[in-house]
Each structure stands twice: as structure tokens, then as C-alpha cells.
View 1 (cartoon, helix red, strand yellow):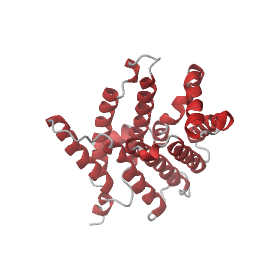
View 2: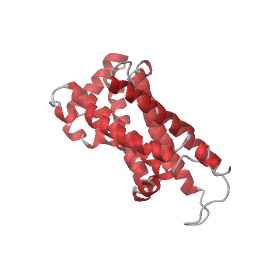
View 3: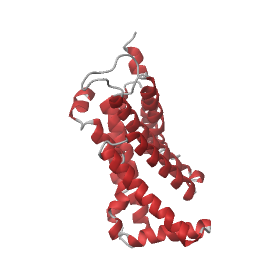
Length: 258
């Protein structure tokens, strides 16, 4: 079943577009959200005492860094540089918004980095091919380790969904989620596990982060919108796992040698 789903999924190049949607969404809507960007500048000025000039530069770097990196991925031009640029933006935001001290946001950013690593791994797979349409011989070790690291970081998104509650549904969600996270991490039944996580996370995303139900003047709308599209980016990363497989460093790959 997973092979049928993988064959009908978009090309991995398109998966990389989905996995980065949270980056460019905020700035595609920028003309209609000038007040939001002004609040970001004011937040930076108040939190860091850096002055309006440096706070404005921070917003501008966010704008052009994210848009530039995403368009480079969209055009398949210098994807490794684009991933490095977007990685730098994620790290800059982690420090600037004090995400290091908020485990939930930190784990979500780690999952986003995992999606970036999967994009980078997919681009390396293309770059290592000697002739168009001809697969390479032997193991591509850097690509395999990128896929492994990407898988491990992706599961951090699900760690943010675990709750210490004793209701039947929450316990079931915690147990099932933990098992699926473990399977994706070690690379066992990876495509099936990732596919189940895609369905599960998509359902939870629409249920928990329904920003469209919040009035536009409330700050919670922006928080939910950010979470919604960041979660969607991780779903894109999981779809890449379904499409490309777990890579060389996985139990699924080692089973083929037994």
C-alpha cells in the first residue's frame, strides 16, 4: 500500500516545496500584515534593546532570507546554499525569539530543520547521478546520514503533542505516537509509519491550529497560523520520507541484506 501511495505522491522536488511552505507563507501575505511586521520590530526593540534600525534590519533579513531561500528551492538552483540560508534563518529566529528556553517551540524548530535536511538529502541524490536517469552505484553515505538525521529531527514535532493526561484518548494518542516515532527513527516499516503520521498530524493540525476561526485582531490568530504552517512543513518532510524511503542507515535497508 505504501508503495502505491509513494508512486502517486508528487515528485520529491515538489515535496521540498511543501516542506518549506511555512517559511514563505508569512511574507507572501506581507502587504496585508504590515501591523504584524511592525509588532515584530517592536518586540525585537523591546526585548533586546537594539534600537529601531537593528530591529528593522532583522525583519528585512527574515523577509529576503526566507523568500530568497524558498525561491531557490522552487527553482532547484543552488539547493545546498538555499538550505544553509534557511537553516541560518531558523537558528537566528531561535535565538532572537528566545525559543531556546521554550521546549515546545524548540522542538518544532528542530523538526523544521529535519525537513530541511531531507530536502538537502534529496538534492544530493540528484547531484550524485553521473547520467540522467541512471542511478549511482554503491552507498551514498552523506545522503544516508542526512536522511537519518532528518528522520530523527522530524519526530520532535510529535514530542510536542504528548501530554501528561490520564484520559483514554490522550493515553492512546501518546502510546501510538511514541511507537510511530520510534519506528520512523530506527527506520523500520518507515514508509507505512510515516504515512500514518502524515494522516494523524494533518488531522490534529486542522483541529488544534484552526487559525481561521480566530478574529483577525487577536494575537492568537498569528500564533495559530504560525503553528499551522510550520506543522504543514513537517508534514511535507514526512511525505518526502514516504516518497524517498528511510535511506541507507535504517532497519528497512538492512533487512534487504539479510
